[in-house]
Image (cartoon, rainbow, N blue to C red; front, side, top):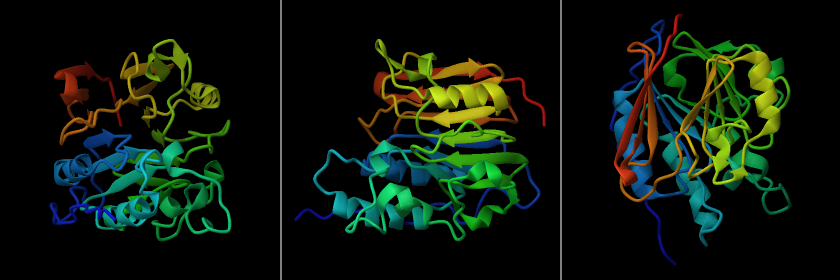
Length: 267
């Protein structure tokens, strides 16, 4: 049987965010699919950012080693060297049953939080947290670094998703936008489109569509971002949000592309 290893060395000795400071730089990745070089790269790079976001699909259901993937990824997330926000994707979400009760329906990810919120996230207030608390996953609503965050797992989007949030982390992007289009197929979420049209979070960070027509799109005043999926080398496709410089940069190493857009943000 093949053994899987993920580097766990502490690249960052302490979080960049100190209590009371605002977030300036966010690293956004998605669809890592248990690609260990990319996971190692994310760990190594996290010390350059205030928060790292993984917008779903940490696992790869097409691989024959699902039994080994979950404990390996849980160990990686538990020892992640900086503040981490992560939601479940369709590869991370499978029905609960007699043999999967501990892991099914994204529970393997939610239980990484000390006090996991319930999926009815919009009924919960935004709890004030500090960076050292570590990992926030499905159902979490919290305030960190001057921003209000909501994390919505796979199959959990509701009409009130994003209400009051500045940053919404979700796997599938909103439908009817380039971030959701792969060729002629719309792989987005129509309920999410309605929710963010109504509630207008500043950012909607997603993945799911591996080769979208575009990596960014606006829904009203909400900037929706999808990294796409590029696992051809060490660095996956990724997005850097810098609220201090008011820029968003998308990098796709596989095709050698870097694109930048300017923001107009105020706190």
